[in-house]
Every structure is written in C-alpha cells, then in structure tokens.
Length: 287
Ligand SMILES: [Zn+2]
Image 1 (cartoon, rainbow, N blue to C red):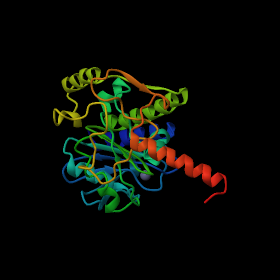
Image 2 (cartoon, protein in one colour; image 1 turned 135 degrees about the vertical axis):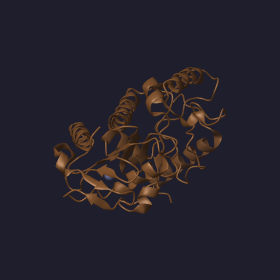
Image 3 (cartoon, rainbow, N blue to C red; image 1 turned 180 degrees about the horizontal axis):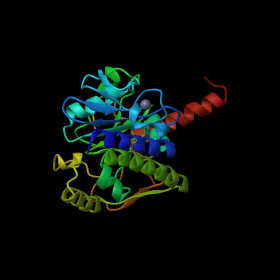
Image 4 (cartoon, rainbow, N blue to C red; image 1 turned 45 degrees about the horizontal axis):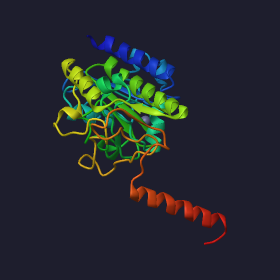
C-alpha cells in the first residue's frame, strides 16, 4: 500500500475513534510502521475525528520528526516502545475509551473466561503502572507486556492496542471497550458467570489454529481462567481484583460470583470484620 493510502486509513481510524467517543477533544494518537527507519504518526492538538492526510507526520525510531507540517503527537514514545520490542506489530492505537478506562482508573484487572471473542482476539489484558504521560518513563511502563499481548490498560489514563495492521490495532480498542461495557452491565444485573477451564482450552486451541498468539501458550502450567498471567514477574504493579473476582479454581466446573456466594478466605474475612468494627466505633464517636 502506498504512503498516501496509509495516511487516509489513519484518518479513517481517527474518525471512528472520535465517533465512538474513544477520544474526546484532541485526545488519542495513531501510528503506523512504514519500514525500519520511518513511522507515520498523528499530529498533536488536532481532533482525531477531523484529520486530513496532509496532517499526518513522519518520525524516526527516536521520535525525531522527519516530515509533516504539524507537530507530532507527544505520546509517540509509547508507540515506539511497541515497535522496538515486538517486530510483528505494524500499527498502534492509543486513546481513552470510557469503559476500558474506567477499569484502568479503578485498577480492576480484566477478568478472563467470560466471552469467547475476547479470549480469541484479545487474550489476557495487563494494566501497566501509572506514569506522567509524554516522556520515556511513561513509554517504559508498557515495555514488560508488549511481547505477550495486543491490548494494555494504562493505569489512570486509557488504552494502547496494537496489531499487524491499522484495522486490527483499532479493532482491539473496540473489543476491549465493548467487553468492559458488557462487564459493567452484567455486574449491574448482579451476576457474572464464567465458562470453565476446559471450554477455555477449546477456545485457545481454536486461537492457535487461527494463528493468534496468547501468553497462556508460553507454558503448560499457566493459569487458564484464574489470576492473571501478568504477575510480579512482569511488574511490581499488580492490581488486585475487587469488582470482578477471577473465575473459580481449575476443575471445579462453571461457576459464578455475585458477592454473597463468594467464598472469603480467612484473612480477608478478618480484615472485613475489623473494618466494619472500626466503622461502627467511628460512627459511635468512640476513637
Ligand atoms: Zn493519552
């Protein structure tokens, strides 16, 4: 595909981001890897819903601007981290889709084993540690994850999704936001059901046949439906589940969680009781 066509495609993805409410005002940025020296990127301070091909900038792998009349996005270093560490990736989308960003703000891990499409197309989704946007420290927060996933939540910020082409990179944004929206709605109904590990293994087999990668392919002992594979070996920031508990332990079959049915472990129980007692004492004016 020629460079102008790619610029048009970036503008089209920008229109969809804006129309879906994934990028308010001038938020969000999109990049495309042209070759091993050049990357196309969206400009700063321009609404992604109203870009023209002439607005698209070109940068090198250090973020230095090579072409374009507008100034390149300030978040390009985040994108470059993905390209440098994952050679299979040619397009990156960063934005602030509200439902997924709600999980990023709550530091709520994305549960597994709830929807088949999410298992196949996204797989596990980590949450990277918060850092002030713009500089290399911010870009470095996603480095541990980029080889093992295609979608990352940025704590207290938004999402970054990537893929072999622009359409795939963008679709991952749509999938994660739709999934988070569904989870929030199901939670309001009061119950979230998980499918079991065996059913998930069937989906993972399908995923392998389709040529997709998954962090759970890495070793045979990885947790299929429970806690996230993105543990302390990836980052010292490992958010704990609160609203959505991980699916039940292996081989216990399908299960659901609705708060009251949930089994509390002893430590958690003691902590809950202590908190309630302290609240009651505070309410009664005893300190
Ligand atoms: Zn942002």
